[in-house]
Image 1: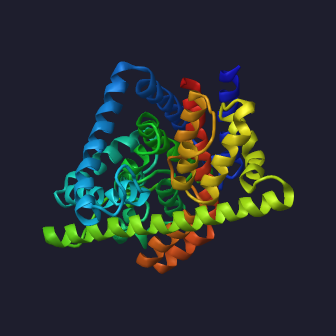
Image 2: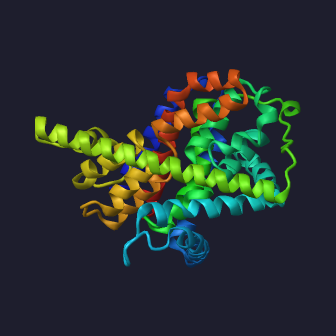
Image 3: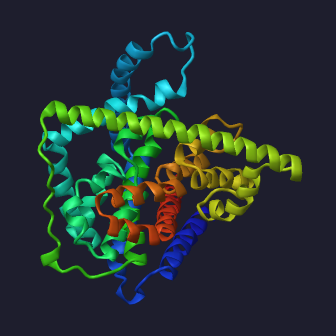
Length: 392
């Protein structure tokens, strides 16, 4: 029965993407079917094989080691601030982002990341039927982040059609940045995070192919990534400060959103005898159900899903990992995969701001299709959760 629900869920997601399509006649179903099969096979590999276990353990060990290195710098600056045995979220989860951001900057400066992003993007374009620029952008978003990726494309932004611009922004919202993956791994099981990264990459192509199909002139699909030349230490300082800004911004958002959620819960409980999150849970319960979550857990799972959409993934992950829930292992896996993306309302502002800072006209265009971006990215998260439900 669970397989029937999961397959039905995939069809429902594709149907909603088809309904929202800007040009249904241009949809190419062969690449879409191919990518769904690839998603299922990759999920099987990562979650159900010894080889996949080795890959995930290796990635988790790498990030654990990076977090250990980061803690050295944090301890030097903030040592003694916390009581012994305590682990403040800001110190142990957010501040390590600074070190990982610096590491990404070094790999970028040494041309290692651009090399991989270019050729992985080229290989993906052969599978997804999209342009090399779109494929590069999806990989780059995963590596450097949803706002930083547009800096690497600033020369091309003014030349892009609104259709191609939508696909680039959709990829940025559907994935997450490698700089904060380590932070996620302190809250959720690493195997689900790694799996989500891969699934969202292909899921972004699947949904964008249906919602925003178009033909690309090969002569316009030029991938020349230009960067202003910087000295090594100039670059390093920039990436360290960028990482610090991300940590501070995420911290500020958490303070505001968690406080607001607590306030809403208190007011709703006082007026209606039920919390705001519970109400959201009932609204999102049908979505949780088609993702393969048992109906007995669907309301609680729906409240976490809604929290992620309304606030951000950090708030929802904290709720999932620290809340008084009694989810099955399968439900935990489905929810964990769903949460690993930037699909939330605040991301609309982040992406609009990033593009507008580089090209005001294109930034205004992104603002106009902001809600469509969020709708598509949310479908990607739901699709990824459904794919995992087939495997678990």
